[in-house]
Amino acid sequence: LKVKGSISGRMESAIRQALQDASPKVQLVELESTGGMMHPSFRIARLLEAHKVDTVVKGKCASGCLILFLGGKRRIVAHGARLGVHPPQFASGRVADDQLNAPARASLVSSAEKLRAFYRAQGVRERFISK
Image 1 (tube, rainbow, N blue to C red):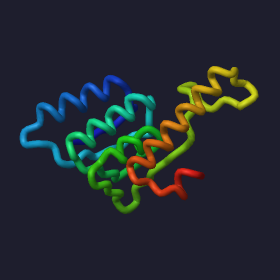
Image 2 (cartoon, one colour):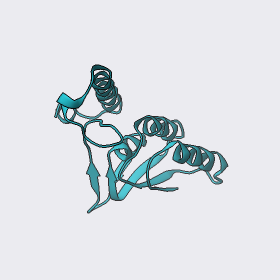
Image 3 (cartoon, rainbow, N blue to C red):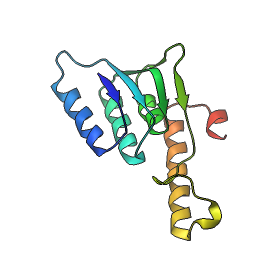
Image 4 (spheres, rainbow, N blue to C red):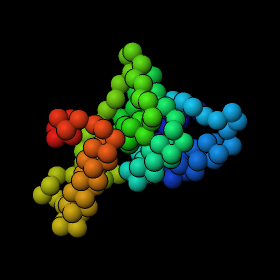
């Protein structure tokens, strides 16, 4: 199964359907994405994990795509592929801390904590998580 494009609820539905309909069973999911929405990324990762598929990146996999990648049973990064990571941010992009109101700041902090907890659960080394 090849997954390409912006991560969204629509992508989540398409992947869920593809995994259900596949015959024979999907064993490998190839990822290529610069990311997308955080919550669908977590749900897709859990879906991949439940189906015990391997994930592979041959091109670029960044942001929410890394979350999908970590949902793989075995995770493969091809020679020349690139993984990208950044802290959680709003869909509109980065906003300076002094421009955030208290609820927005709390939302980003909560998202960062959720992301760190997910990384730990997926076996990512603490050295990487703490950066």
